[in-house]
Image 1 (spheres, rainbow, N blue to C red):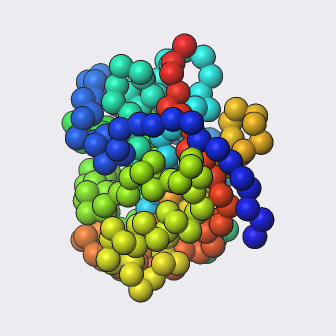
Image 2 (image 1 turned 90 degrees about the vertical axis):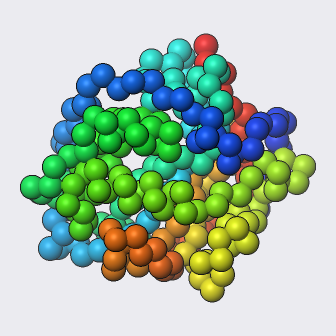
Length: 254
């Protein structure tokens, strides 16, 4: 696969430190999330779950793509210059049928996460609205008895995983996706015999430079027992990118 040469010109504190240094603001009200008209209901009966993807987003890429002053509370927490830099934060945990199909927006009687439960997890997923969205779109299709139980599983898995310091691993500001995979394997022995359970996703640079940025890391697991804390790696539905990418500087809000 073609390699894209890129450069890096920055340094940040280690990514592992971000959650420990986070002090989240109080969430005043439960976010109101409804299904977008463009996103159809995909019932579990027609879209069975064969694998779970635990997805972590790379904060510098997300923040560097934001324009103008920060208004969203989650963006202020994650990208505000008076806050410690975040590294890999939770995007979500969702079931997939294969690489192109998955259940979503399932009908459920399970209660949504409460305000204190959302508040509790802001230092691994800085947006309460995104937490609620992930529960309603994905978590409600799974085996969890409540939104609180879903986010408890997410937090347990996030805490279990050791996150490599990607800045420290980058050489001359360049990194190949395979290096991220190997770093996760070295830090987490559970992936030693299943590197295909780790997928690296890149994105076009938001600054219009034509470069490539790291976007997300997907870690894939067997569905059975995941709600009880059984995290058994399974090959991801889609292959990992093998592009060479950069890690952009953390955005400084206007």
